Every structure is written in C-alpha cells, then in structure tokens.
Length: 145
Length: 145
DNA sequence: GATAAAGTATGATAAATATCATATTTCGGA
DNA sequence: TCCGAAATATGATATTTATCATACTTTATC
Ligand code: FES
Ligand code: FES
Image 1 (cartoon, rainbow over the protein chains, first blue to last red):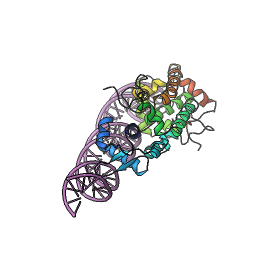
Image 2 (cartoon, rainbow over the protein chains, first blue to last red; image 1 turned 60 degrees about the vertical axis):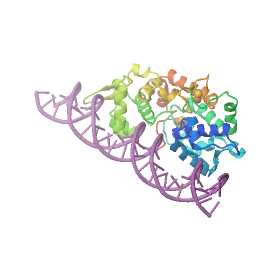
Image 3 (tube, helix red, strand yellow; image 1 turned 180 degrees about the horizontal axis):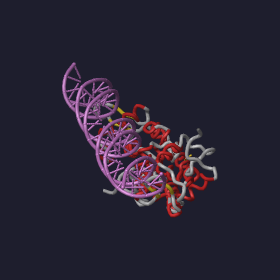
Image 4 (cartoon, helix red, strand yellow; image 1 turned 90 degrees about the vertical axis):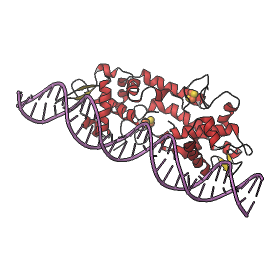
C-alpha cells in the first residue's frame, strides 16, 4: 500500500506537525531518535520533501525542519505523491495494466470501494488534520516503550 | 498490500481455477504465456503452493498443474499466507510494531475498517468463488490485448 | 526398460530498495 | 569576519526482491 519510504516520511512529518512551528524546529538527529527511523535515510527523505515544499527547513545553527501553516494545509496525499509517485496507490491490486471498472480483475469489486475510500481520505485530509489526534494524545507514532 | 509474488501467484491460481481440473492440466510454460508472468519465477511460486497443497500437480508427460475440488474450496487468504506470510497484511500501515486499536497510529481509524473488510473477504472467499466471474467473462486477468 | 516430458530443488544473477558516508553550502553567533 | 552548526547534494554499500539457470526426480508412453 505505502512504501517503507513513505511510511517513514509520513511518520516524521506527523511528528513535525505535532512538535514544530516557525520558532520550534527539529534537527534530523532528533527526529531520527524520536521516531526510530535511520538517520541518514530519513535525512534523504526530508530533503526530497523540502525540495518539493511539503515541509520547511532552515540551515545553519538553530536551524532544522519544521512545518508552516501552509505545510499543514497540504493533503496527506501530496507527501505520498512525492515519495511514491501516483502509480503505486492507484494501480490494480492484481497488477493488471490499469485498474478499470470496465475490465475489472477478479478482486476489483471486493477491494476497489475500500481502497477508493482510503485514497479519498488521504486526498482530503491534511497533515494538520491527521496530527490533531496525535497532539491530544489519542493516536501514536511509536510502539509502547 | 499484496507483494508482487502473491499477485503473480493469485493470478496464476485463478487461471488454473478457470481452466483446469483433474483431467485438464496446464504446464508452467502455458501458464506463463497466458498470464505474462516470467516462467522461471512462476515455476518457483507454483512449487511453493504445491508443496503446501494449495494447488495440485502431476509430474511426467501429460502432467501439469491443476486444481481439485478441495483446492477450489480453500480461502484465497491461504495462498497469500503461503507466499507473503501473515505479517504483511495485518501490520500497521505506518509500520508501528503492532496494529492495535488501544494505541492506534494516526491513520488507523481511517484505514482499519476498510482493510479489515478486505481481509475478511480474502479469508471468507474461496479460490472457486473468485474464479466464477472469470469463467463467465465478467472479470479478467490480463489487460486488453 | 529406455526415453522424454513434465514438476522439484537449489543456487546464481539482476534489479530495486533501504541504508550509510562524505563533501558542500548556508547561516547564526562570537 | 570567522567558526561551527545545520541542511543539501551526491554517491557508495547492503539487503531484499525479482528473475534466470541448471541439475535432479518422477512418470506416461513406446
Ligand atoms: S482492476 Fe484490479 S483492482 Fe481494479
Ligand atoms: S495502528 Fe496503524 S493501522 Fe492500526
């Protein structure tokens, strides 16, 4: 469904959403520690996201990654598009060329509605929306320590 | 969601369901040609399935792979278990240790119901059930040629 | 029984993903 | 103005997954 990379990316970004703003930034090192994502790998992912303006960064001392209001208002799917592209989520579960109701695979009817609903959610919900539960403690990014 | 391997395996098995029985068997060569799955790779997958009695095979001339009534009555999920194991389908979409409603990830509420429904379908529907549409021409295993 | 046609077992190679490392650029503060 | 702290760019390595190849076993048929 989601690649390992976009799981990592989304986890880190949600962490940023819950813990940063223009004044409070986080360095990769800290993000890596708090989320258990390998540092150098995470750095690469964050660079990709930053380059596409999904997240914000400032270099130098006191710098780090953070989310602006604009960043928060981006749909979750925009992040996934940057990391995984669009193909992965929208192609047929059985791997037929295109997922197509005119020429469905045997699983299409059983999976399409659910997947479509999920896709819709990802496209509609923003990073900020998703981080809300996180902030008020009703959802989590890591297993119980 | 499904690995490439289980997509291939399921495609081939559904093809077997629609085109074979105790008397009509298919060789890997033909399966490969009809489904566009690389021959040697498919051979390996079918061997795994055969070893676990998900599909049937006879060696020697006039031999090949086929499905018995028993094979047809297996839930689709049994095939996926053999190829992918159980972890892949049942773990958290964000990659947290375990998917757990007590300690949900931010996506859990948005994805769990859909995924659970899909899982339920895979566990309840049999290979035979899924192949029915295929036989009567209302679902397909390959793109339009 | 010899032969050839099939699956079976096992391992080698190739490609994609995940991970690590390092040099470069930018910027705040002494 | 200089130093060091951070992101950025780029490339190398390791691991996993996909793919290919080849030798072995079983069995129908002559
Ligand atoms: S055609 Fe396979 S999921 Fe739509
Ligand atoms: S906890 Fe992440 S999907 Fe259930």
